[in-house]
Length: 436
Length: 88
Figure 1: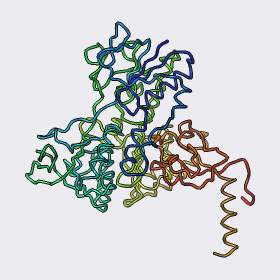
Figure 2: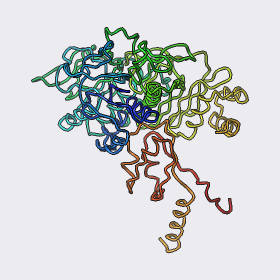
Figure 3: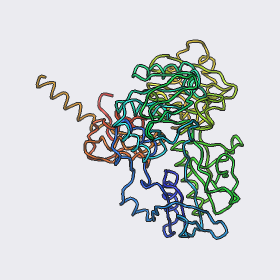
Figure 4: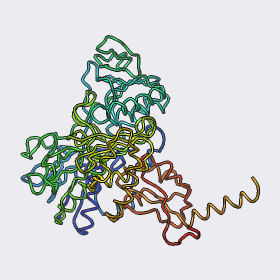
């Protein structure tokens, strides 16, 4: 059996581990045009801040790869030839597959403004981008960040840590408005301002001003100009679909796959940011851009490719991140609507977070430690925990396990209820019952 | 610091050493490697987390560097159940 995996992200790597756990003899080839191979994409945020070295971003070494016995082929897949069960690499050589996994991820949406081809305009898709940002930050003094979600803040904090003055432009009146509530947005914004970030609300780039092919500043729709040496943008991502256009694979916003991560071609699978995965519970196919779902999907795809029928069960999306230095856990469904700073989906984002059904909110704390719960008829639907994370693990388990919170539901909804204490006490009992 | 305090601190450290170890929640981990990077004796903490295992390594000092540095709250201390602590 010849297995081919396009893409060197966590979905691809997890698929290799899964295939090897079932099939020790099959030939596995991973092909990618990323010269750096498999590394921690979310770790780029901490590379930017200087908390780790670039060499640390690689979770595996050559010895680990040797044990898994697979070939790494550096090259760009230029065509998928379904009828021949082959890939065309760099426009010339062929690579035959019996089972194929497409795990090519997503890429940043381009900025729509006049002058975007100047040097000094950056995004954070991969390690090459991060290295470029650090190189430019060494010689620059002022940066403008445009966009929303987690990546825009990662860029802001990375550039701050590298000693740059940062202007952060928001299209609307607050940060990440379709996931965070107003208080949470203000909390993040306040902390950014305290770190020295200059926030500009209702701000949109109209024109990028260049000097000798380099960025020298930007002009906003309002007419205001800001001098800068760098413009970093994170306005959303889009699954990389160029390879699968016109080969009769079912596509929507991503590659449509069933719960076995299989496309409409039984020998082709897709996983990670490029896949739009059918969720039997909601009956819809959704996009996620999260590390752990990508790992789980890669694992399930690998199992199925090797002949072990396995279904992917989407758990409530969950992410832990740092927003302006504040550890934040987002679980399940917490927000609604659209965010003017992001088109579609952002990195570290899940569409499910915004599908707010009829739920009642309870919250506690409004300074550094903050918790917001979304309460359904019997269960918790979602939660945001900012700052102290003691209860986030418990909430994650209770939401995923569909804990029946009827005994404390009324108490949680009393204004100014001590929700942290109520949850902590309930957790002790529920955990025993659930045998966790 | 008095001799007695030094002795007490060392005794506390030894108690932590035999009675505690570091556990992980792999669902939070993105394999960034800050834990492994900061381990003073170069234990590959991240590899344990990938396998969803506790950091059981006889060399571990339970110094807590990995627990403190992890930006996503993946790691925490747990009490080893191997020995029951007296008086508790």
